[in-house]
Length: 427
Ligand SMILES: O=P(O)(O)OC[C@H]1O[C@](O)(CO)[C@@H](O)[C@@H]1O
Image 1 (cartoon, rainbow, N blue to C red):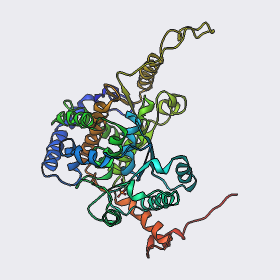
Image 2 (image 1 turned 60 degrees about the vertical axis):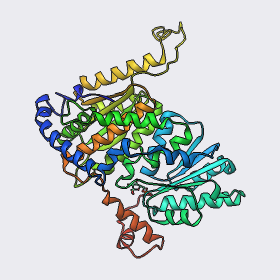
Image 3 (image 1 turned 45 degrees about the vertical axis):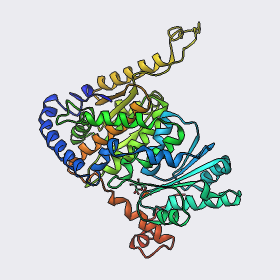
């Protein structure tokens, strides 16, 4: 991936080149820390070793023998977003559906929409205890039984070494993939968690991991030598100066889910101790016509991350004699999108609004491997500079306990607190 931080400098938030020069010493220290963590395969840092440690063979083996029309991935958060980002970005020879929510109407509609006898189910949960995933799987399993389909013949489990799912896989002798040790969900796209769906979809896993490895090779003791660290350090430095929001705006429909994946990575990793940077998901050029007004003329409290492939297939715009439109005729949608990208970037800069350009050569396996790995490494660096524990997410537990208590799954003070809600209803 290529990162251009030029437009992050000398804007409303006042980040100057000298500030990055000064920060670079801390980047060198952080890089040393990260490399130590990788060398010792420490929890979290081990995720940055996946280009070397992830073996596609068991993934290919688990996928072999299946030739489904549909793949139903039952998982949530990092147990769905990585796979979804890969198959959305790189396309699929299988109809991929991600059951990553428990909206009954929506779940019912998906089950009604797929032929369960031609469906493979990948139930994915690192902990093996996530209520949404386990509930959805029970619903899917029952739907398969009602359809006369042997779910044990069509289910692959991806989970940790213990937990409900591991027990079920052992009990029913289901094919099971191991979630690698030390890899938090949001950093697991380039592991068994994201790659089973990618393999069934026909994604070139070797090219994907090679792209990630190329980005790993670019990690260095200076932000001016490593695109990932340039992004991580610059977003951190801008956050320190008031950029509390990071609007991620890919200029490719195939990368829309990437913005959702990035949102979990950035929010769950860095949202700690009262700090962090709120990821906002946008899409170029579409959100030029919905969000850009705010990004240019709203509070100077954000940066915009503009993401795009440098090369892409194109589509010609026919010649036209429609009044005022002839300038478009004979051009192409790709040229229009390029002009929109550069114009939006310049319009933000002209308004003093910081923005960063992130480019990959193409939206292909190698390019997406670079991008995901690069953003993971950027996040780890940001976490080091901010001094937060990047690889935990303790704040999500309160709500889980409350929900579990409300459903009779145990005594939790959090559940009691739910009934103490302040009320001021207006009807
Ligand atoms: O893979 P699991 O254990 O089901 O967790 C799913 C997701 O839930 C979280 O733990 C947050 O609740 C995420 O960190 C994780 O990606």
